[in-house]
Image (cartoon, rainbow, N blue to C red; front, side, top):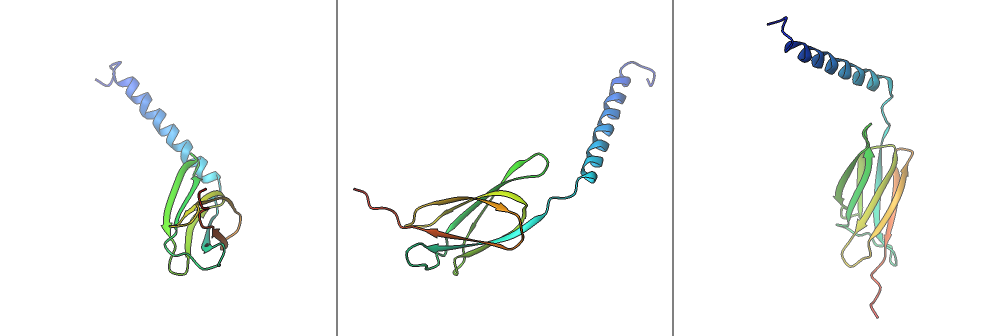
Length: 128
């Protein structure tokens, strides 16, 4: 049975898998981890400057070597704030919505920890 031609392809497949996995481990050990940051979002009413609680936040970014898209959703607290944590360095997209206000979208470059992003939402325009 060990000398049959049927077991040879299986052995080579196993050897190939081991080589691929060892290469993945070596590559990840060579690359330093991407820095992660925290940042705060503060949502206010554009005209009055009053904070907007329960504003819906959506944060999207690409993560990891495969650059998969990650999306987080949250709502602001009574002070109109929310803190995102463990977000990788680089470009993120923030989208904000709140009742009786226009939507807001912004691309943010995360380059340092503990940044604060202030969002001012406008009331909707009257229809003519």
